[in-house]
Image (tube, one colour):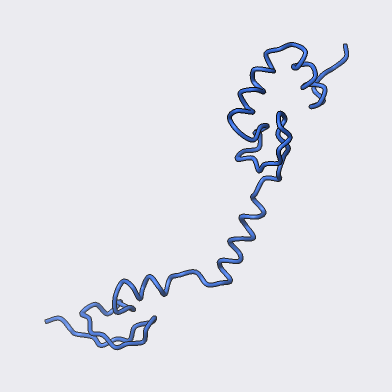
Length: 107
C-alpha cells in the first residue's frame, strides 16, 4: 500500500497531498516560478552579454556606424557589401583598400 504524504509547496506555501515523497511543489506553475532567475542573475547575465559584444565599426562604403554580427564584417548591410565586393575587383580600389588596411607593400 502506498503512503499519502502531506507537503508544503516551496513557492506558494500551500499544503498539498502526494504519493511521491520527493515532490516539492504543488503544481508545475509553482515549480516554474520558483526556478525563475533573480534580479541578480539577470544583471550578471547582462554584464556577460555586454562583455561579449563586438565594438562598433564604420562601414567601408557609407561610413555608417554599425555593430558587426561577426568579427570580420566590414560593411553595414548587403548593399554596401555588394558594392565593396564589386569595387575589390577593380584594381585601383583594391590597392587603395590594402593601403587603408595596411596590407599593401610598396615593393
